[in-house]
View 1 (spheres, helix red, strand yellow):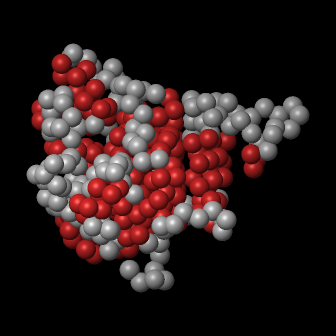
View 2 (cartoon, rainbow, N blue to C red):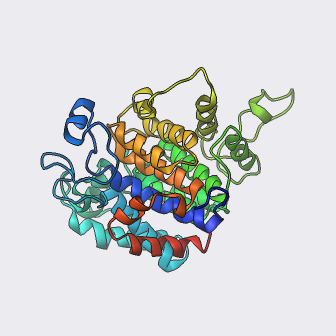
Length: 359
């Protein structure tokens, strides 16, 4: 893509969806190394492309460019959205019942992608072993699995924030019912929708999100007046939203301010994983992804590779970062070697393009 060419909304939508899948696949080999010396011994000083997982590690036996189970579930969501041209929860649940759950046995090191996360294992046990209906399958995992699939809903409904919030919240609660986790999941979806519309991940982003809160389009309480000032005497901020505070919407711009503050230095950028934390929990993952998305808003390669080389739960970090930066650079702004090295990329691209035309 020429430097002066600005990607259109369909191009940005495809970039977000494919960027997430590419981020997932790039981290497949070096996934979950909490010992960074071990990561460097196995993969050298810098992971720069798709890699085979080592025989003694997670995802062993898969090939470079393949997706983890998070990627497989995202593809189920893409297929549902593409074929129905809308989000229909019953259809997504049917695909989980028929296309994923028969391949699981309730243990971690099993199933498509070589590893099944806690929230999906818990949902499988409630759905398959206990026979509970969808809607009674959510658990208390504080991780990003809901974001990893609902980011597709965020793209599809990028210009319809009220529907986005409703659908993302409902889908998230199929596996995760903690209100804070759901609020942070909806917030990420709202951020991604702004980027798909063409806004940058910058200091102004949270202000635009707060305007959607005050118009009633995003379900968060507004606890302050404009510019986070205290309410004037007699003024009562809106408390119509489901979520207790808008803080999850304020994090992205706070992080963007830090990115642009010359007194705050994270070098090299992969060390953002040490600053915000290497573990899986959503409150570690989102600030790091927002940081990389704001710092490398025009450089997909640097963003996702710093996400990968930070170790720990680098697969979620790279998946979320890939969506954020893919939305800002568009599909053609993603390096060709990443586009071509992703397994089954042409099929996945067609699904993404089908969804993008409806945004």
